[in-house]
Length: 335
Ligand code: CP
Ligand code: NVA
Image (cartoon, rainbow, N blue to C red; front, side, top):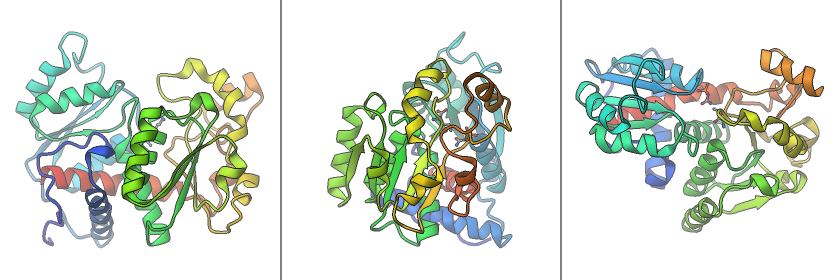
């Protein structure tokens, strides 16, 4: 087993949102994830966290985040306990504060996916152990770390790059991507209809980081202008978990923002990559996709099947990198 690759000391800290971290911290977490990926590929054991216990509290569904936390913990030698909303009293018969006070006595770390961001903050405040945000309504920081790891692996750098996000610009993924980009010095364009643009406070925060790190934050409405010379096109679902009732109005507002081959060509570059946090709705191979096709006659939503499975698409590298980045976060904060 090689030396623990923690070249940064975040021991005991929680990972709740990108703006709590510096550019150096985020870059080092990304580099640590790249090291850990190599160690795993080489079959080099890295079970530095034996006898540690991690709770995974998930109030919303998940494939990648849950699986990535589980495999990351197992690779590090730690045990995990998965607790979904039906297993816990959380917020119903026991406050989040009391739950944190109890779980903090039993576990060494908690991953939380849920609704209001204040819930994860309360867990972190009273748990006394590192708490990792596995997605809240407001932020998805373990996602943005994997996004920029994927971008760095692909382009070998994060310098002089432009990322264009198209779609619901107010959601967790867009907000996290925007703030992480600004901290990392990557130009970010959020392209969305006016009603779905990020709130002014978050835009202002992103602009402050961008000023410090010599990058640009642009909020745009026209997809064709927004993708010009972009290195990365990124999109997410039309409606996030918990917002399903808004589907019809979103479809109306976001159809023009679909990432399709024509938009990919409109970048004017031949090496633009496509990213998506997943799950994505790009065909009718899901019951959800079939229901939408029957009801609205639409078979592809935020991205076409062609772009999704094209050589430009790096979505499965990005999904794999959830594992390595989450492992780096666990190790750096709990190691
Ligand atoms: N991208 C992401 O968070 O995926 P899951 O919802 O499957 O965890
Ligand atoms: N914005 C999406 C991301 C899913 C990973 C949601 O919150 O449902």
